[in-house]
Amino acid sequence: MSANPCKLYRFDLSADSGPEPRRALQLADLAVDVLAAEAMLTPKPALVDGRGSGVHRDLDLPKMLKSASSLHGTFLNMAEAAGAAGREPNQALREQLARIGRSGERCMFAATGGSNAHRGAIWVLGLLVAARAIQSDESPRGGTGPRETAALAARIAAFPDRYAPAQDSHGARACLRYGVRGARGEALAGFPHVIDVGLPAMWAARAKGADETCARLDALMAIMATLDDTCLLHRGGLSALQAAQRGARDALMAGGSSSAAGRRALLRLDAELVKRDASPGGCADLLAACIFLDSDRKKPSATVRTR
Image 1 (cartoon, rainbow, N blue to C red):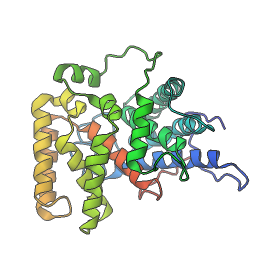
Image 2: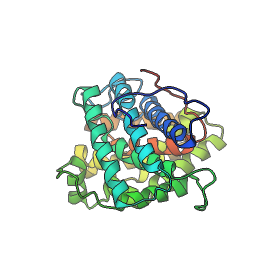
Image 3: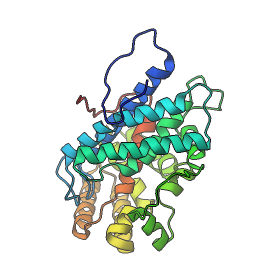
């Protein structure tokens, strides 16, 4: 199957279809649902959510959901490319995924009227979708859990994309100015803020009885408390990054989003970042990665079914 990168596919394959096409569709469905779940999660500091646009004047929740839907064909193509029989991480795969991702960006911009809703998420989830497509539940690779998937994604990311257009992006400038590793460095390291920070916080919150919304908010706070988010650095500089990290730590230390004190601290952080016009967009992308890896064997709670 060769997907239209801007089309949302929602159908069941016949029982006699092979496992690879079914798995590719499952992964694409999951990636879109994860982006919807992340967008709808409320309240998120300074980010688009069910309350409004946060500091993103060119985005709102309907646009975020349209963007998520527009990327279904992109994730399907990525899963198909990576899931071909015997496929291993190599430069050819890396460059094929990059071409698909750039096409996906055009779909996103068409869906949002030119607004960047999910460029970072295409990179993060694209790598993880590809890694999971290579893996199988019977894989001899030593496991198919979140850590193994993230490590395989890092192997894909390590290959250069020789055809990448020259880009002077906000994130690249922030990396140079502040000496941080950014989204590429996070991927090359095997997504440590997902594996060692966000997912453990999500699971710990659930173990203490938090509902799914609070577990995901706590994961976001844990990521924000430690990530050198280039979106925050670009929009508000080092002071905004430090305010976000401090506020996220305060919310967690107050009991997390499931406690009254923790929720108040979370809302104070929201007000502080809105005042600074600074958004933790990189943290949101890594939260989506947490939800994806956590949900690979179960459906996330928010779905997009628009055709």
